[in-house]
Length: 325
Length: 280
Image 1 (cartoon, chains in turn green, purple):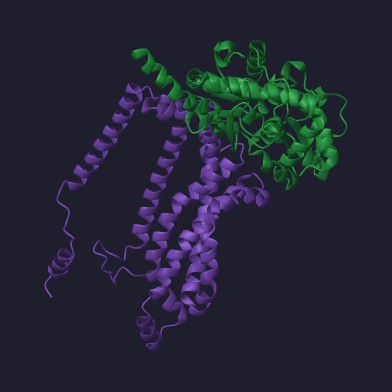
Image 2 (image 1 turned 135 degrees about the vertical axis):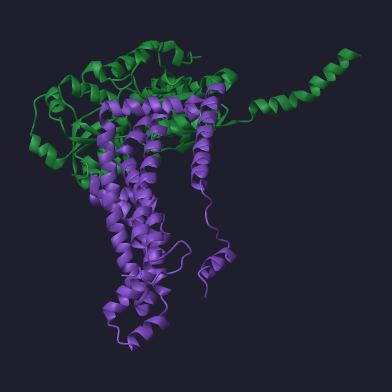
């Protein structure tokens, strides 16, 4: 009798459980900007790739990686997207944030100089000379711990050059350069491309093309992160998040034309030629979501070289990674 | 009228003379409350292991010492105070002058008040990025932003104060042969000055807010820049250190302003009764 009651109860609950499993899980992702480092995530959003994994994402664009990270720390977002630098900075303050997936492989930020400044410096023969020429220039960058700041800072300092970094949100940089408020900026496309195509700026060093010395090139410009507690409590949601980016990689490989169309919807300010060029340059960087311990070790090495984060050598790479499932 | 009459009137209005030692007791109470507040903060932070979220007084002191030792504290303070100070002077002067003119010349006041009011209702923080475009990332940007914030504070109080000048008194003075200059300097300006000082006192913290907001938006040094930088590193103690410095500056400046105010308005006694002998 007891058994049949249990069986009855199980039968009654089955549809509810099935419904619960099929209902998409609402999640909030706080991202640090709307630059093309997030092009992949935007394609995934418009292509419904998260929904196919049972996630219902809401994306909130913040002012910087720190602000995005703070959203997760405060519990108002389940996931954030910022550079590994912000994860390391949080870790050094005993905040356990873990990387779920790499959403931009390499360096997405390019260094753009104001046209008059670039003309004054002239055509320089090497990246090393270009880095050396930055000495004393005021260069806008998103924040002190941004994934864009420390590779350029470390590379410039290796050449004995000390640019003055000014922190501002990427959308403000284009206008600031045009107005002569700053002499250059480090930003991802479309902000970098906008300045160059308008004639106000000159592309001085390209991040996506890997022009910085290999020692200073990061493994990631943007990752998806969450709190260690959330990852432990909701491993299935984390797994679905990783699966979404695996699906994105397949989508980019199998349906590039559709992916480019979706990217165009996300960035309507890009003209057709720029969109095609940007997609060609950037798409491979959105398609390698697995972040390894070696990648984190490379990030730590870059931080050490730039001297931005004190004590970063003590961070174990595995402590800020969610294993790929 | 007996000598005690003004005191009796003041007492009826709720005023009473301070007892001997009352000031000392007040100060001791204030110090005691501050110490209790800091102790509670320290204990709470340690007990809840919440230093990441709220830091603690001891950590803030350590951050302050580190900031001072780095040599940046003095230069950051100098820059922020310069920006706020110049902005304050510009904003106060412009606000006082425009407020006085529009308050005194009623036709002009009616004409321009809605315009100034509509500008005042703008969320001025939203203008900060535009100030970067107009004035660059240097000190001028912060000076102008501070000046704008202070302007409105001083303008409205001066405007209101000037409008409340006793027009019958002005008319009588004119009938008795007072020149326009004498009316301004003997009646209008003393009347409005009480209000001007109120505006200045309210405006002073806004001068600092303006400089800090400007440094938040775009800067490479200054107290606001350090606070923003500390935020990037999730360094709560350094953020609080910046806030403590700002609070200390505000308190010192407000104290100085109070001294100036007391001196400038010495024709008013404690019971707000005008002392005709003291009016210059």
